[in-house]
Image (cartoon, rainbow, N blue to C red; front, side):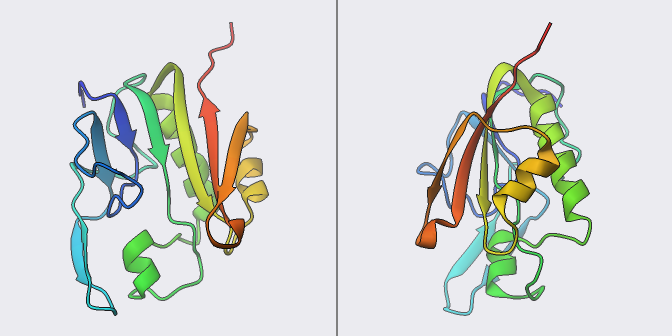
Length: 160
């Protein structure tokens, strides 16, 4: 698949991190296309531009300058829970799935492109994710309640 967009959000969900949820430079991708009324009565909408699986991103190599990868981060939660609707749920194959997702995000990045990875350590430590990826991020930042959310930056560098 071809696009002239600069940014890929590989699992956009309801686009909660975006200031401009319709950013014209971004392609919003998710495996889901659904709507829910949450337990507090609010509406939750997941309507990606492209329905796709981050383990097999439907774009050509070296397409984007920036990729945002904020996959589901919980394994233990109910399928119809508030958190599952809002963030998605990891499968029992989560380690392989996340590694495939990371590799796919790097594949669709242009040389010297940037991958921003977001992870919540509620159930799985970020150190385990870095071990799975096999690449240490040059820098990152902890945020959120109890500093459990980690933002990590990776760069695609082609070594000669």
